[in-house]
Length: 158
Image 1 (spheres, rainbow, N blue to C red):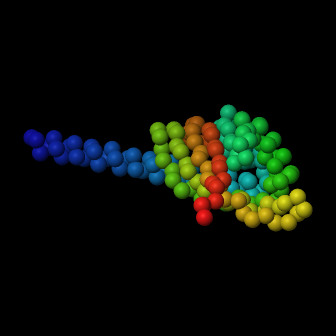
Image 2: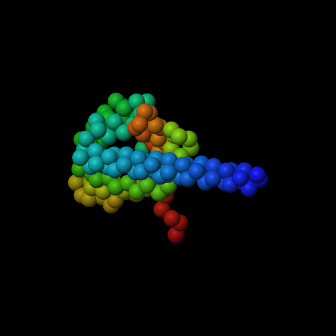
Image 3: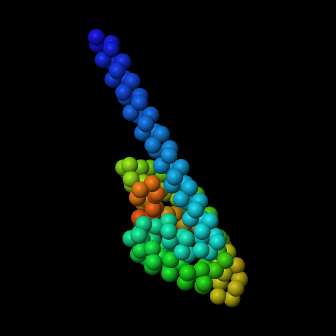
């Protein structure tokens, strides 16, 4: 009898943990797809589409410390940036670590590189590399960025 109980418990544990692994894989895939969408919308200069990646009340704090709150403010802020200092820039995002905090909250750590920046005289500036921490919330079957915070790390000490 104890062998049967042990076998049942062992089978349950295997099924429970394999289900969690599959759920984590599908969540990670969904977040990676959202990151690809974000990149595509950004690189097309489409501020309204970029804003759809965010939760309705989502926030984005840029490396400069400026924060946009809510989809409308994010879209308007990006329109301003795309018409000004970020006109024609390209963004590449590399997710470094994605982990689920619950079935509907996931954290993504990423590095990103912005290229195509120009100085006031129109000369090319070097690429800017930043680190971002994003909290995604699942609403229905979609993941939305609830909060994104980015920072440009200081240069390493000499």
